[in-house]
Image 1 (cartoon, rainbow, N blue to C red):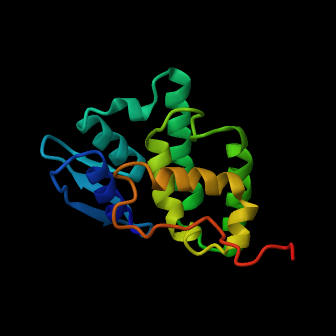
Image 2: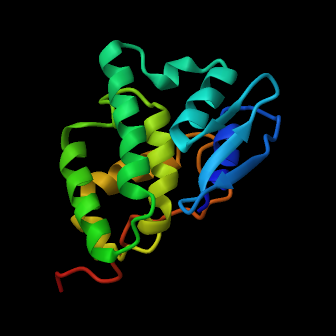
Length: 174
């Protein structure tokens, strides 16, 4: 999904109804937002943080200094590790690392839902939707986190819902 489409989803999930116009710059298709009150804003993380502030939902950027740093870290991770990554082996490594990280966490910052969760959810959706049931079971913590985020009010919107439950037709007992 292009960054402009993700930013439009983010706007809607934040309750912003402006419908900003986004363009893309360079080979990496880096998103650009022309603001009404000043210079252009460039980059997914920069624009996403701006939209959160515009919506007066700054709690999504973290409530403590440490949480703010963790949100920033995951926004950076999204741009540097997830975007532009399409090789299956690279995605497996990424999911394995994320699965370990989420082992004792509900959200990326621990126990608070933040912008990092939203942005990483949008970035991973194209990969998670194509996972087999066995792969989803292999990355159980990622699956749990992803399922939780996709059911968070206003986040998934028109994106396809990813199913994580394997219905057994037959039991092993006779």
